[in-house]
Length: 92
Image 1 (cartoon, rainbow, N blue to C red):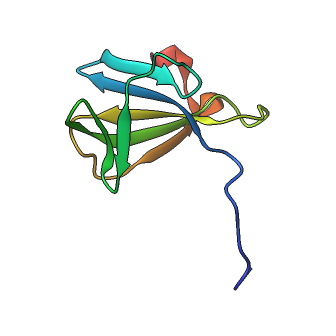
Image 2 (image 1 turned 30 degrees about the vertical axis):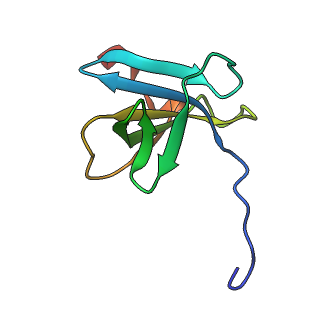
Image 3 (image 1 turned 45 degrees about the horizontal axis):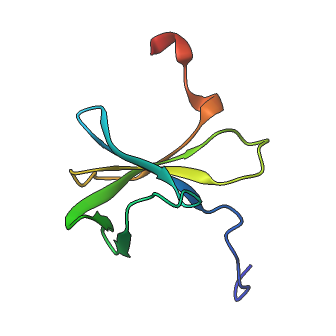
């Protein structure tokens, strides 16, 4: 596909910011009560605090929809992309 323009079909629809396993922010873009935030190259800034993208989570491959984006206060070495079907629920 050299030279072809590619458009992302899935986008981020929900944001979850966690600190130590506790949700600090959890909202969807369609929620009118969602906090104001800005996007930068590092992730998102909410209420003046930087949050770093840690995981993009897809509910499953068969679902037509978007990703939930998990952010943390600590910058990860890599961003993981996980599908619900990849999780071993017996180990949780």
